[in-house]
Image (cartoon, rainbow, N blue to C red):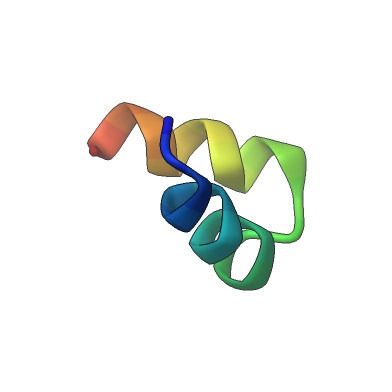
Length: 26
């Protein structure tokens, strides 16, 4: 995972569950 993706995840998916779903979809 690149720093850019982590940055996007931090601002678009504040919840850990949402981050997990986001990672699965991408």
